[in-house]
Length: 351
Image (cartoon, rainbow, N blue to C red; front, side, top):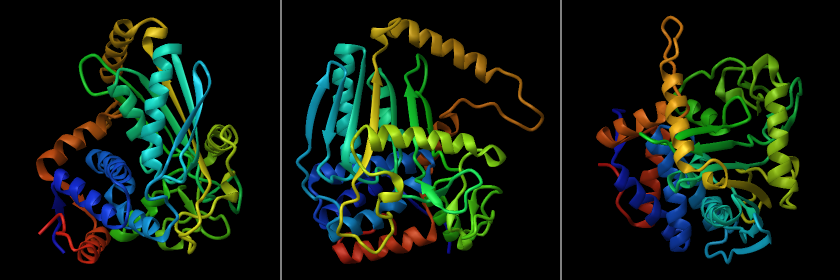
């Protein structure tokens, strides 16, 4: 099959139309599509539009509330809780980021815990939204067990991502987005679709033994390889903030994302922090400092054959390329889109 690429605007419209056909209200469909296109635009394909078939399935199945009534409760000057009412995780995260922004404008820092949420896709999308509003944004979320502990032989933590974004003076925001597992599970699915081997020390078989074959993967390894206790510790921090501070389940108690039950809400949590530079040294000083820091970083000596990049540099370069050429779709995703288009009675986003 020749490479399939799709225009970004066409993909956005297709995602929204597909989810609307599945019953999602306009805010839910828009937020989910916005988050997926953030990832696909920046080259994070594991969390991009390839998630659309799953979201279509769980909206139709009843796991997600198609018209959630979210409620925000302010607890202190700079903190609050958002009950997402089993909304799509992207809608909950963008909404919580807005509330955290309002709190930070008043208190300097705003922290919002999210309860009764669901899979939210690319964590960086929500951190970036805060950075684009002039703030420092930090977000994290736990998920169902799929990552073994360091030297463990069974699933325990979720991939439990952390993302942060900071505005800059002369370019795109500094953007850091990572799973606390060695790779996200959707990367395994993507490599399976592409027929590629996984990198070393990223996943394990049913006995906890490393494997590069995506077809044999039963669990992911924590970030850090031989020093995987660091990734496991970071996953635990995400668990505490996302699950315990929000009164939600812990990873081993959460229904699997891809499990057979698509009717029961998963009871997940997430955690958002927004920092207003004006509550500290001020926006102008922060931006000048970021400019100085990134200039020094990018001019730092690279080892032979290497390139020194700041977090986000690769993604912004890829975004420019994809604006020009379109978003590539792997064969499995392209086939799924044709099925979705036929079922919803809409045009596919490619010819």
